[in-house]
Amino acid sequence: MRFHALSTAITSGRFSRKFLQALLFSSQSNMADKCHLHESLQDVSWLLGTWSGQGDGIYPNIKSFSYKEEIKFSHVGQPNLQFQSSSWHLTNNTPMHFESGFWFFDRNHVKAAIAHNLGVCDIMEGEMTNNQITVTTTDITRKSDSKPPKVTKVQKIYKLLEDGDLEYIMLMETEQYPLQEHLRSRFKKQ
Picture 1 (cartoon, rainbow, N blue to C red):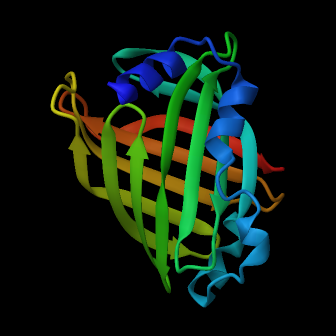
Picture 2 (picture 1 turned 45 degrees about the horizontal axis):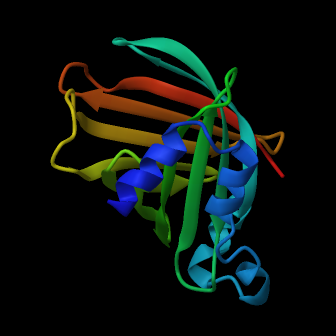
């Protein structure tokens, strides 16, 4: 019941973006300053920090949209990165999508466990080459009352660009449509 009340409050638009960001990003905000970066994360230290930007969404069965998003990669000295993402509609500022999870790196091999505010959890695996990370779902779990069409595959690409910006591309496959681009955004480090 408490989850439903919180979910309803978030999606109702009654809370400001600033309040939701503070709530989402407040835990362990200064802990990374007190911990040494684990040696397995040295090659991905460029990801650490808070990134903000805008993006566009497309898909065959939905109206195209624009959004603003903030993502944060942090650490607490363990061999993983903590990940948080929050997005809002670009024009009316209503909350859209929230994710939280952990990323694991073993040389160039990447694994991620990510939970979404819509009741979906993704397990993803992939590779890191140079300054690009590409992961694809190996398992998607959803709450029992999820509505169709179900997402059957997701691929995420994070690429550090020459100008220091971060590009994000998300491809999605559903029961109705093959794997294709759904989201594209560009972030600046804060």
